[in-house]
Image (cartoon, rainbow, N blue to C red; front, side, top):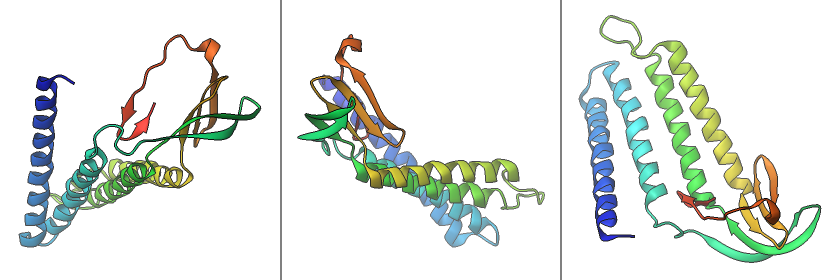
Length: 188
């Protein structure tokens, strides 16, 4: 990676930490010093930005490949057992991401019922409950799948991705190019 890119990545990280930190402090201040239902807003902000920021920080804290393990093993793929190179997904990062989504579901649920200045909810109840259900489903799904584990397997016949959707196998004859991409510890 070029030096300018490294500096830019560090500046973006500092900016994100500052942004999450600022909103988290604002949420804490509203929770501690607010009156009545304002405290619920403070809790929602803490869940959204405090939980979300902490989760983002944890998920992005290690350099790419930092949690990556490449091992040799035998798996059932292409209708038979084959030996190959196995790249396991980082289950800890998946669990943190799932947990953060569940925290954000709580924030959406709270915002759907916090009354604003004119007595109406800050967020339309359908939008709040819908957002809460969506984030709870995504978070729950992520937490369950992190327990199961996912992996990429490179065998003499091809590449197989094992995930919650089941195994997806692609023979080498169908592969025109192969590259490696890692998103928050998960190899693609």
